[in-house]
Image (cartoon, rainbow, N blue to C red; front, top):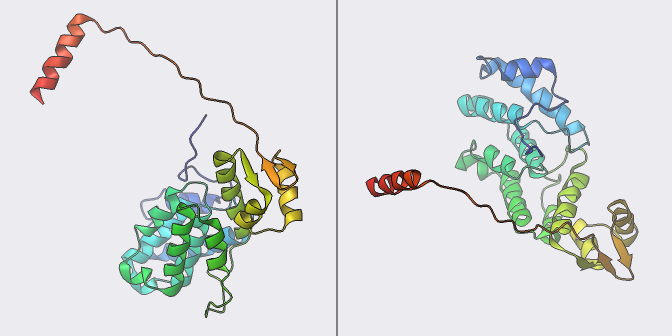
Length: 232
């Protein structure tokens, strides 16, 4: 089974962008507008499995790093929001490494960092509450303009529930995915979960069986290994 990677070319990446990213001139400031337009197309695509191009978004953040006068905080907000619902947990941190402390003090960026912490701690109820806080003074949500954000996030949460629980109260699932009972019952059916009254039972995954691996090491090889260890 192949390991998912955010550096594999997405099927939705245009040839023009692919040539740009693999060219020695990829950090030419003139490429900034092209990458910003491409990000807008990613954000407009509601399919969370194909609408995130980390390599392109990192290149854009790098261009901002080299050319701070071109920096757009709203673009950075959208890049982080996209990374937040990536199936690859490291994507968000890779973006974060290219941001200065000053950028991270921006209200929207700081809120996304706090939301990321809630996700890492599996505090899903807190995540939804904080993201759609009615007392938030900001008129727009930090995920505005990200098509399919909620559903993309729910996919991550459902995967976490599947990996963690065998039985869980239906009400808890409702809170975790921020949906009413009817919607959760539909999700349960789609995912092959059994619902008995107020309890959801998840399929038991195949158990990992222990195996014994033996190696035959010749005496000559063993003496070389011991000698090498003594030399360290």
